[in-house]
Amino acid sequence: MKVGIYGGSFNPVHFGHAGLAKWVIENTDLDELWMLVSPNNPLKSAKILAPEQERLEGVREAVKDIPGVKASDFEFSLPRPSYTANTLRELKKAYPEHDFTLIIGEDNIAIFNQWREKEFILENLRIFVYPRHHNEANQTLDLPKTEKGVIYLKGAPYFDISSSQIRAQQGKA
Image 1 (tube, one colour):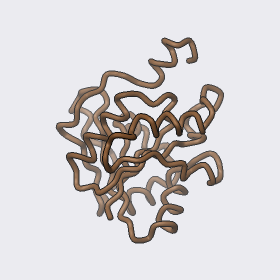
Image 2: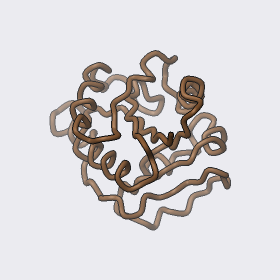
Image 3: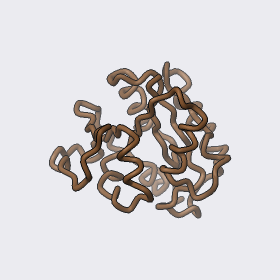
């Protein structure tokens, strides 16, 4: 089974997250898409995070009517902070029959060189990149060649919204 891993803080989840999940499951070869709620992203401040169960419930509610997409608390039982390479190793142990694809935004691929064990990720997973800024000029990256591949999701709808914008509007930035 081909499973997409769409991780994030989802702080809060919004229509852009759900819309992208729906588009990916309908327009790629994935059988399922798991939205992994990260309890503690190492590249973000934990001070602004809503409680993890609250964020998980928000994701569940947002994707409840999208076939093939589900919310996941898989990282909740893993050591913190949540490093993607560690999560992927644990997913492979728990689900050895699955072929995982990582789904990240182009803002994350732009800082991919800061990720822990990026070589492991590139060697073991296909990566789908969502263009975040409606800009195709950023599609050349200084990443090692990988057997699995880094694939830009051309044609994906552009959602001009972010969780940080929502928090700022709510005075929770």
